[in-house]
Picture: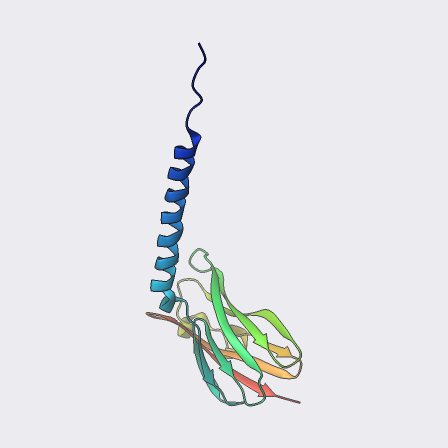
Length: 153
């Protein structure tokens, strides 16, 4: 007696329907929550402190721009040096690059207690004649960085 081959067509249709439902629901979910990942833009002025939220871009008059991409931290024990890195995307007419500026401190101590000067605490970066100086880093209900940029060109 010959065995009947299993009906794989019905099985394939079920698998196809399952993946279609999953793909559709993920697409709908990402469209529904798209507001969570939208980036914003703001205009900025050279030599003034500019505040940026996470994923916000500051655009300067000559189309130079900086976008706040994220933050990473190194956890340490109390009394040891700590470092937070601010990840930035820098763009201008002829170039773009990713860079990091760091915030330094001492774990378990406030800014007033750790004894660091502003120059020791916040990094600066020279990018093709644009000097980017990190001025502050705030963690509250959202991440905020404050930068000042000087165009030496």
